[in-house]
Image (cartoon, rainbow, N blue to C red; front, top):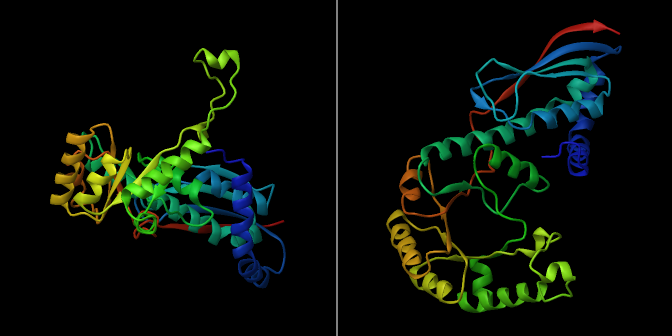
Length: 306
């Protein structure tokens, strides 16, 4: 993650704009004179940190001279009451940024911790944990970072996802795949090549040149239709464990190179069993939702007159 990218700067500004008016007004009411304070962000539960560099940038925007010390690193497991960030700076800035900082830190840390727990459960299988295609608006790259930090995988931004609604509107799985493959082929139509590229070396090949067409299927008939139509990535949507075993076996018998993802009611109790079906990816549909038990507190230690 490039923490100094335009994406991060813009997101910090957007998040603060939402929270600043209320928090700044409250700080102004309480502070009759400028104050310098020391504060700590402390883990309120055992958890895994994710997003600490983002928090640092939140407070830098509010007080460019704030002294900030990261006491932990992203990906590090911390215990309850352990300090992860120390701050010394303008009290108004600290109180104004508190809500934004803690909300993002808790959200990303919750994702990372959940992925890590699930990944540990399926260690030794071929399966990888992944998040859903959907993301919180504006937070996709941050959430993908949190997933990867926990040991999960994210889907390529170049993928074409055919959902059950796409399949319905297209008139079936084969029709949807045929249309998608045709559109992808048009995007990757032959272009003039340099002599250097013509001999098989393509140093400037863009990542966008690689497009994966992914299709959701709901039963064995749709699965067979997808495999016969040339699908390279199938998503078994909302299938039970026994069906998942049978469907993965069908894929491995018909076209073993096809990537298989299972999406649905996957829990910490059954994730190992789903992984042992031989699937490549297990999607945690509720991954981006708030994670109970992942909490941080901001504690002001003492105040110093400017």
